[in-house]
Length: 236
Image (cartoon, rainbow, N blue to C red; front, side):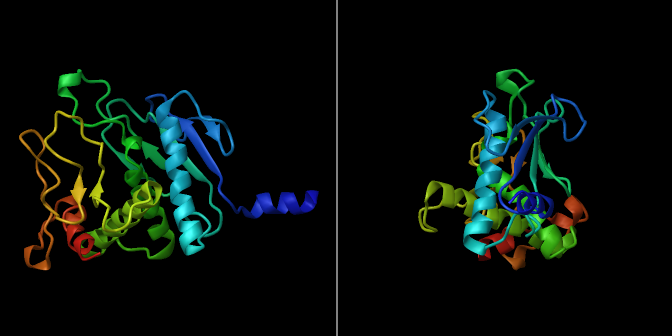
């Protein structure tokens, strides 16, 4: 039994989450603050990263019989409190990294909340890992837009599954709760109606088209990967 347990540990398998705290620094992964099976922490960002990565793992395992990001039980590492005033979250090829948004700004100037607040963002970023191991879509122009769309699709499915929503009940908004009340917007993208997620004097208007007729040909944003992803999003 001992040998079997050691072998299981060596080859991986099963849900294995690790959450780290960068303590507003740049060093990754940072200090380990919660591992698989540990009780909730007092820090909400730690728990959101833990629960969100678990919900993403569960979707891929229960529905698609995929064991983690690489289909081989890869540990799900997350780092919270990355840098100070960092308005982003990303998958770096090995782990998840989350900023705190504008928590360092006066309340009236804040545009973004912490990035663990939206479970579909967590699912979105982890799906970049799945794409990395599975489809290897080049991150530019049309393949890049498909890469981004895949992440939105599975991020949205994670959210819908956790909320127990049918496709008809779902809002198809990506990043609901990410904007503070200072921003005129419902989220960062709308899969149902691309181009309508926000329209704000500070951050501008949602630039996404919903049809190839309106495809945006640009060299910015890696060839419009976050812009043209609205087209396959709406098709889905």
